[in-house]
Length: 323
Image (cartoon, rainbow, N blue to C red; front, side, top):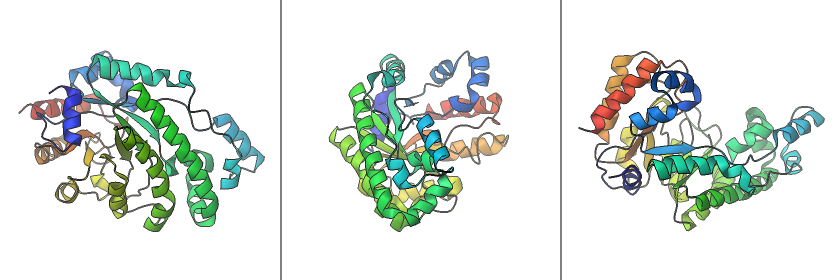
């Protein structure tokens, strides 16, 4: 199988010839990776990454306009305030050049499966409100938030549609809902205020015959049924360090969606516990040798991870995936 075929097979609940592999390594480790391998791209080639996470495109709001609005209103914004701030144009073709370049490099030149990060609902608006204020607004301004979220969802839909036109294989919706032991808000709030506006993007992506994935850190066990109902094909990261058991996923949910994850940056990689790191990689890859996992870090590998430990991890992954 080629890389892209391998990833698609796993998402379609088929057995791959080997576990597809990727890692969020560049955000914090570009300098040591470049020193050791020449470039991040050389590292990705060395370990035969099968898929790629693309960033870019237009911003939802102008940071300058948000800053000016906060200053004018004493430092905090209500949902009605946000509705007075125009969103950026999601159709400016020049804003997509970095995505176009990344698709060319990863998909057309390397044969990888490519997915693009797009905004969710809650996370996307934390930049405007601030997360603490936003959590308060969920209780205080539900009616107004429906208007804010609907506008955000329609912008997200247009952004996703443009990315599909450019040739991405999957739209990746980033929307942190989870804390360490559960949601940051009630499941009732999720169903009322989050679900309907994720559905706008999911319905569009599915109508375009494109895969759709969701990212949320933390424990989202309480709304897995909603994730399934929305039709998400892939869930990232299914964080075991927050009580999201991969065994539970394998037994109960693997027929509904595919997990992207398995290498936990909160507990496993980057802590100098090399025997534990080896055993965790062996455990996870052993569980999903027949499919069901896109092996990936659960988030960006943190800067305290040494290049020696990063190399050890991906050397072992490379060895095990070819057995």
